[in-house]
Image (cartoon, rainbow, N blue to C red; front, side):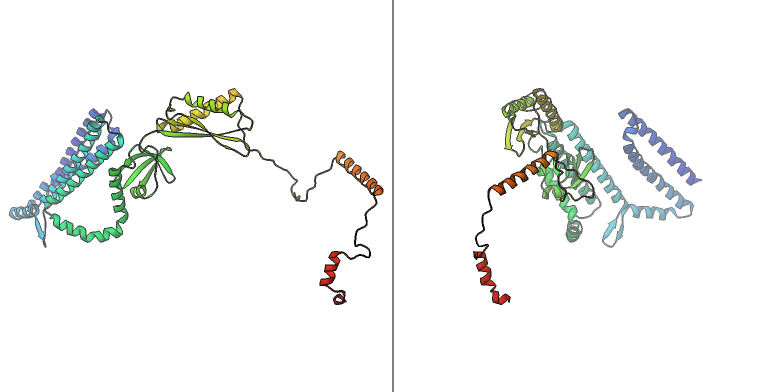
Length: 410
């Protein structure tokens, strides 16, 4: 009956707590489903505290019911609360609870401080988003470190002993957790040096996108396909990284073009500059210009180069310029060449190397005329005698006879 009363009381407290949390979230957001995960997490931890608070009196009453003297129960409770010595280590339930409370309060206060800085204080300054994120992240890490130190001090553990333990574990950390330590140190360097920051457009290897979050272990990059790529911080320090928005958000656009030989290149230059000048995102300084790249094999090669004020508009401006150039070329009758290829068809099974072109009637008549002319020339001009053919030894014959005498040939 006592256990049933305990479970009934536990159910009542949990139901009341759930109703209070639902009411609080409705007043804050207007819908419970928007913060469902946070609501479930709060309900779990609050329910755990209620269970512990109800379980301790129940255990005390059950021990008394089963005949355990109250003096012994009180002694056990006193030893459990004040501490039990195990060798040189003293374990105290009160110290553990206090350390847990100190750690929880420290982490909660650190989160509140970070949220207050990032939402209330830093947005009112002239700092950019990356610097604000670095400041709030650094203060949050400092708060977490201080909370851990206070929790350890509350447990009664000497910091000098921790230094000895850390020194003993340094060898194991160097071998087993080397990658984790490298990423942690690289994350701190990223927050301090800020080669990349939240909101930057970066290219890391084959991945390209916007930096969304920088933690002490890894960096989250959101690609333009809306997929998240988690990059270890050590890769951002050791490998080359292209940052399109490191110092400013100005970007250059290059549009290559090819023209037929004979087209008016000066006219095309003016048309390209007009297309760039009509775009509001293209900067007037540095001014757009047309680069005559080369005289190609089958076309004149030009490039339109201009600067835009916002990197986020890169693809949009590129598209707008392509459409504008195409419309302008159509209006002025300018065409761009394209690659052409000659294709020869032959019957299957036939060897194309042995294929002979068929002669037409004109080719056959022309061949017969050449034969008739050849006969007339042979009758008009008798053939000249070849020197050395009869009774005369040519130089070639002399060389052959010198190498191979007739006597040797038999």
